[in-house]
Length: 277
Image 1 (cartoon, rainbow, N blue to C red):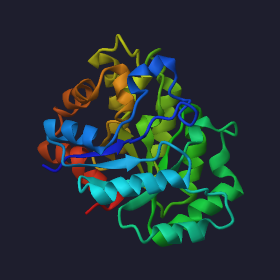
Image 2 (image 1 turned 45 degrees about the vertical axis):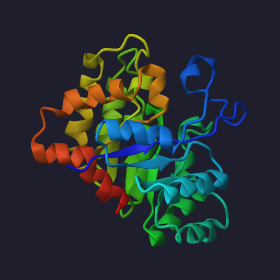
Image 3 (image 1 turned 180 degrees about the vertical axis):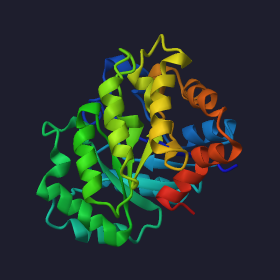
């Protein structure tokens, strides 16, 4: 069975650039590179990964593509371009020379305009992805799921994936509004979902496996076995335990799936979505 970690990050820690990594996240206030991750992937028999942008700059693309070029286990890169720029098509054309560049992402969760994804400038950038067959990662909080439904419905021929199951408030067991939003978005068959990043939305030091089951039930029922994929959100997951602890949540839950469904979840869906080789 092929196993792919569809969502992880690398960085050289910069306290100014990476100001989102505050004092409460001391566990990740350091550098994380391919050599660190390779040890973990080998330990848990995971064949490869997709490196996702953590900084909104084209320098980040250079950084991730260089790592991908040097390390075969990095199967793909999700980068960043200014989707609202007039020259977005030109920048996408430039990146098309890099076979491991698979898609792009914008940190929509942090935008003051919660509906930024619906603005003409942004949708123009999304439209520019299609000729290059690039996918798009949707990083949002639950309050943006309604906008995400409209957004993904508008672009029916594009491939979208919701990062981190849209970050529900697992810590406080808030589920109803999030669940309604997830079910709506999942009706758009061009949208997939990463089962990733959940531990960071739970009580970091006191979570138990049962905390995640209601949320996983919603995701797997809404998207079905062919549109969900495993992602670790390493090294961010380290703030709430670590790779093994994060892995225990999804291993426990997916153990009840059929062998074919497990194969899809752990790797085949990521290969299909990102068109990994």
